[in-house]
Amino acid sequence: MLKYLIFLGCVIPYRIASYEISTRRVLGKLGVEVVEMPEFNCCGLPMDPINHDLMLTLAARNLCLAEQQNLDIMTLCNGCFSSLNHVNKELKEDKKIREKVNEYLKKVGMEFKGKIEVKHLIYALTEDVGLEKIKDSVQKPLSQLNVAQHIGCHAVRPREIVGIDDPENPITLKNLIKVTGAKCLDYVDETECCGSPIIGVNAEIPLQLAREKLNHVKAAGAQALITVCPFCHMMFDINQPRIERTFKETFGIPVLHYPQLLGLAMGFSPDDLALNQLRVDATKILNFI
Amino acid sequence: MEVNFPYPKKELMVEKMVVKATEMDPKFKYEIKKMPGAEKILLCYQCGTCTSDCPIARFEDLYRPRKFIKMTQLGLKKRLLSNDVIWLCSACYTCVDHCPQNVGIAHVVRALRNLSVEEGSMPQVYRELAANILKTGYAYIIPKRRLQGREEKGLPSLPKGNLESLAKLFDLTSLSKNIERVSK
Image (spheres, helix red, strand yellow):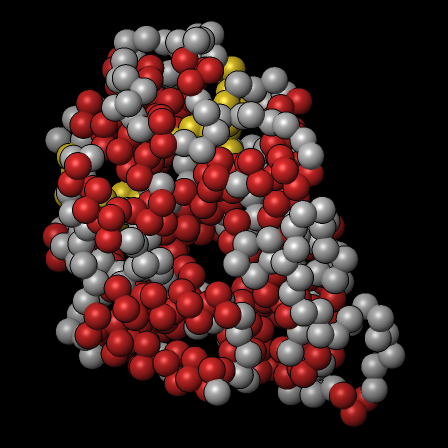
């Protein structure tokens, strides 16, 4: 049986519970067991701009906790995936950095050994669970539904570090969408950043980026946008009414976490998947299910 | 536009094209070169791929990664480190993937930011995030009602942060000291 240590990160429990709820539902149905982190600290990413060493150490501390449990980490957030996966690989490969980080960790009674892997939900689903098994779990194929994907930067970039999907033409999320029966439409600038990492410093740029993407998604004729990161989700869902007000445009594009889409195809009710917690009303897509 | 989040544009580097030799610190590029991810800074030949592919640069004329690299090579340390524009990189890593010289531009920007913090400036938001992590382990303070609400939704309770360890790590990596200095 597949078993992971689930790393929720900070933003999901802070304001995107619908992602967690729907993920736990679909993983349960797929027979994937998740174990809670025994202790937690931020993945480190928000500290990278101000202190790279602290980012390395915060990430490594979480990796050590997973090593103690002898379990691979599953992340739901692209940001957590970025820092934990990056640091895990770097510390495994670069002895000098490992020694430096272990010096810090020694003072808190820990040591990085390099025994586990870090996987984003989408890679765990694709590589470990397998598309066939996911397809078998689909009871109500969403064949009337046309959606667009936003995989998010940190799930695929930098190529040299993530190295799984093609950052210029990512197919992991597309394939996961296809097995639900829904059609995944192409649109302009699909791999463009949502802008959310700098919203605390400057809101104008991210809002314009997200607005442009929503325009492209709308032009492609998608009934919903599918994300796999709480930050990207906030940009397109929570901020969508704000973007509409600011630029005097209407989108009304529901933004679903991938597990919500999969959960609908599995036959879960919208309530089971916390669809009512989304900012942009998603009930209109239920007519197509 | 309703949005109104101006960040202070301290010095418009695009307008000051004349560079005085006395302003340049020839050792600066080597200082940056020593920082993780910025080792290849000297290889940049100014092709401009980073800037033309940068999503931020499309919406902000002052944000020009190619220029940051040139300024670093020239040693315009003060102009770079005191300029708020270096805080606009969203770390999407498009430039890192596309650079023909593998310069790791986003990592260089990170190095510039890290140095800027050591020199005493950082945006307020990072101070808040750091304070939150020290207080709870989480980068955001999760309201009590949401913690209680987890049970009603059938979610397991959240793991707690080891605050003693975190405080130690903040001290060891000198972040505590730097934040204190910035606050003064």
